Each structure stands twice: as C-alpha cells, then as structure tokens.
Length: 280
Ligand code: DGL
Image (tube, rainbow, N blue to C red):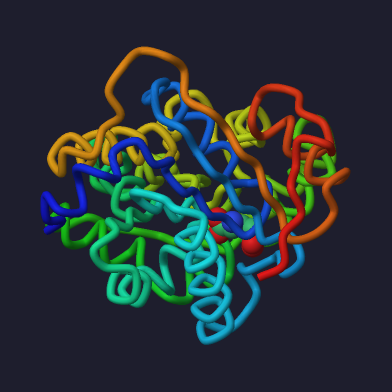
C-alpha cells in the first residue's frame, strides 16, 4: 500500500512506461486514451531488444535498470508494458521500487481472456520467454477454474511487426504456420486468442483472417489502462485537472528507427527529434 506521504506530493508526477522497444507504444496509446490528463514518460530499451528470446536473469537485470532509470526521472507509478518483462521481473520490480506501484500486463491480459471466453478454451500467443515462463497459463488458471490454456511462442511476429509487414501474404502465411493447427478442429478450438506480446496488436488483420470470425481476439492494452486508472484512483495518485498531460519518449538506441517504427505502434506520427536517447 502506498502511504499518503507518497501520494500527495507525487500525484503530479508522470506515469513511467517501460518496454523492451517500440511495442509498448500500443499500451501507451491505450493509457493516453484512458487517462488523458496524465503525463507519461516512456522508455524503450531498443539497444537490448528483443527481450523475448533472452534468459530470465538477463530480462530481470535489464528490466531493473530501465525501471530504476525511470524512477530517477521522477515517476509516480510504473507500467511494465512488455509482456516478457512482466512475466519474468514483476515481483523483483515491485520489491525494489516500493513504494512506487508497479503494474504489469499479464494479469490484465489474462483477465481480458477469461472475461471474453465462453468455453474456457483460451489460446495465448507470446514470445518464447513469456510462454516458457508460464505466467499467462498460471494467471488464467488462477482466474478461471477449469480453463484449458494453450500457449504458443510466435517469435517471427515481432520482426514482422517491426518491419511493417503486418498485412498480406507473408504475414498471413507466418500466422497460418504458427496457429492453424490450434484452430483446426472447431469442436476443440479455443474461442479466445490472447495477444500476449506488445507487438501483436498491429497484426490483428492477418490474425483474424487465420483464426476466423468466431474467435474473440483480446490484448492487454485496454485492460491494463483500466487497471492503472483503478490503482491511481485507489492510491489517490490520479492527476487532477483537465489539461492534457505531457509525453516524453526515450529510447536506448536508434532514435530515427524508434520514431519510424514507433509511429505505427503509437498510432500517431512523431519524429526522431522527439525521442531522447538515454544510456542506462
Ligand atoms: N515487448 C516484448 C513483449 O511484449 C516483445 C518484443 C521483445 O521480444 O522484446 O513480450
């Protein structure tokens, strides 16, 4: 619990959002839509992307460094937008950043999947690290007794999303290769697909064509934004006033690429000059 000693002076501080790169901008977009009066400081650890194929120890170390950097800039709350970092580092970050609240994307993503599924058969697609760590599988099992979860690593989706090849033959062929067998037998197929990776929402069109119209596709962005709003309200940390908040964008490498690729993920254009390069 955050004490009022922390809440009162900190409510005008920005919310820190951390991801391994540009993908978390999909979560930032949902956060800004849900919380327009809040200011945000986003850090993409582009120098060390991808996290999804790294060992848990490396992901925990990188996540802690990035989070401590954001804390040094002054934040009132940390959103871990990266699924892999959320899956592997959340307990560590909560312990080390206390009393700053830390919110990850796995629980909100699992809640969205459980809420959407009628049959309890839920598929989760994510990075190798997220799938191997089992965080989604555990969260869904906790939230919904009897759920049948099938988790699958879809590593190439990250590269496709970064390259902007999100529609068309190549994206669909790759999606079919990863997912077709999961959805091949209608009687046993999942009725819900959870996008357990920051990059996957931009592949929605190709995924939809592969899984068909009956499957509900959910991601954690909107539910994470709702969880952050609830947490800020409960801790009396929400910004007051109606003036739109400020946005600071930071990356650890490649401002031009971050801007070019990131504009697609954020859903609005920004320039390399808008990105502050930082060294952790
Ligand atoms: N941000 C990562 C995630 O959501 C995807 C990219 C990466 O592997 O770093 O898991």
